[in-house]
Image 1 (cartoon, rainbow, N blue to C red):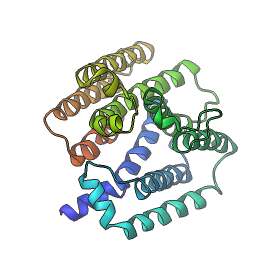
Image 2 (spheres, rainbow, N blue to C red):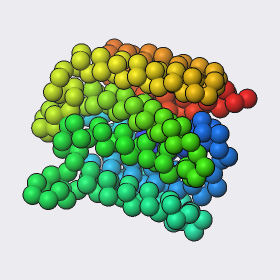
Image 3 (cartoon, rainbow, N blue to C red):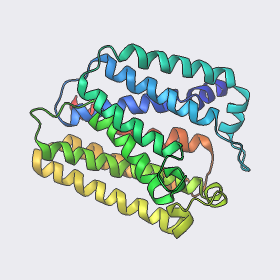
Image 4 (spheres, rainbow, N blue to C red):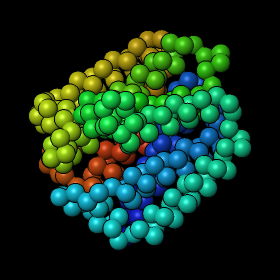
Length: 277
């Protein structure tokens, strides 16, 4: 059982499922039909490729984690996931619409600036700027799970941007939780993330404040649409997210973060689905 859980979490299959679930959630929140299967295939495959590439070439760190051990012992599995993800991306391109390619160009530029030292005058990656790192990651997740799957034609712009901003806040909270986990490594690398710059206590406080804004935006959506089911889903999602993040104060392992913190994405999507039944 443990070997299956390790494979599901560490091969990025689980996070890819979370990404697809958030895309579907976006359509439900905006009252839109589900997308063509190619959209979800692209998101799933691209997530597999990005995460497995990241950990395949990630340099060794002084803090050895369960994921690092699995990665070192499962290079062949990572290559298989890269191949599967790449094939899914290539196959899905045939059915994607022109607007999808615009989003892909934006995402490619952001990913390149994040991972490679391409900034003019400063040969540094954006991930080396602690404040920009979390903003960029949150923005990428927001673009992938809100902008990419949604055709805005005929939509109320206020509804679209409400979902967009709220998704960004939610992803920012989850990314900050991972920054709290990685604070020691980031400090050694000279990356001044919020937990490194302001301390762990304030970082946890920032997650609470952000979740408060998340709930306020959900209340605004409720006032606009009267959709109590969606409000209850977001409220319960925020409460569960806070509980899981608070649990990281007592436990610091890959299973809690990858299944628990990342799992809040899947939980939120499931709560929205339940609200539509």
